[in-house]
Image (cartoon, rainbow, N blue to C red; front, side, top):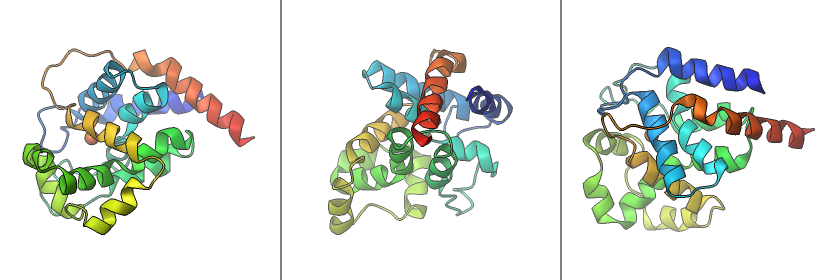
Length: 188
Ligand code: FE
């Protein structure tokens, strides 16, 4: 358990200083701010951790930071969820897997949301398939993790503030260890 938590913290330390895809914060700042927003909203630990880990796929594959500019959709939400599912339960991995779908959904149903996307997020939207069609949106709201994914998406969007003071990675260690332990126990 502690080994995966150490690995996660090391990944942020080694690769998290890279810019977050055209945003004014680093990968680590983005993750910490997303978790902070979740906690501020009174989210359960599983969603605070989902917010912290939602973009971990970016740190895993080490693709250049401007992949969207190059016209590549790295499907980081699936990479993140697949890696996380080795260690954490679906209460964490499902919202992570759906956080890009949540963006496509929100763009379809909320014009203000679409208009307020950051330039980088708007650019990647097209690569991710664009706003959902009515049919896709209908299917999305039927998924069990639909609400959690929308919440995660909102924290994600609010986690791009340069210089915001937030708790460090170590602040989440105990909760990460507890979640990994819980998953290991339930897998027995
Ligand atoms: Fe993100």
